[in-house]
Image 1 (tube, helix red, strand yellow):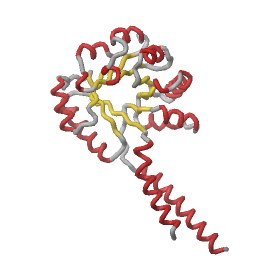
Image 2 (cartoon, rainbow, N blue to C red; image 1 turned 180 degrees about the horizontal axis):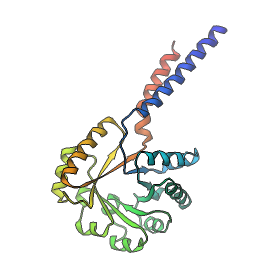
Image 3 (cartoon, one colour; image 1 turned 30 degrees about the horizontal axis):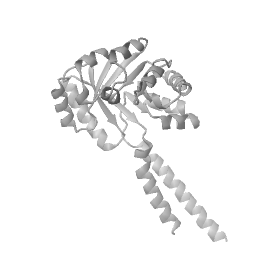
Image 4 (cartoon, rainbow, N blue to C red; image 1 turned 90 degrees about the horizontal axis):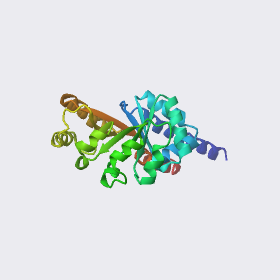
Length: 250
């Protein structure tokens, strides 16, 4: 009986040590300052329900984030107001990012207070539910941010926007630089290149290339991160399950 208890204690202690090591491994990944963080509806509800919203925003601010891009069309107005309030309290400017740009969503989100800007992306430009000039008039008290896919970019549309970026972040460094020249946006400081950084070493290396190349060209980078649970948890959960199974088989 005593021996079984000791073995059980050792196994549980080993599992706790593994959890601590996995948690530590998150902390030793290279930290890169982000211009903004993407907050999806699932993380938003998780942070609120677990009372971690302020702590998460504080961490984002420490890592250099100036903006919080909120998946606004998937959240109700009271939740959006709460997020905007706490983000501003943390020194981060909230932006309502619309990924389902129906006419109802566009009209609803132009009226939600607390957000410094409304952002439309490739979903809007693929099938506009509202003319961009009309949208500009509706949000006279907010900025209009426009995020284009390369094939959608239009100088006329870009002129209506307060902030413009081109989504080239799924290409290699060389391809991204070539695309900037092909689009005719190379050297335009008012047109940013959107760069998604998932926290991996590979993305860190790619970002270093982006920073060097576009500094020479004269374009801004807009680096944004996302706490993607699937990206972070899948490799660690698999490794954790394998180690736990091995310990329990002792």
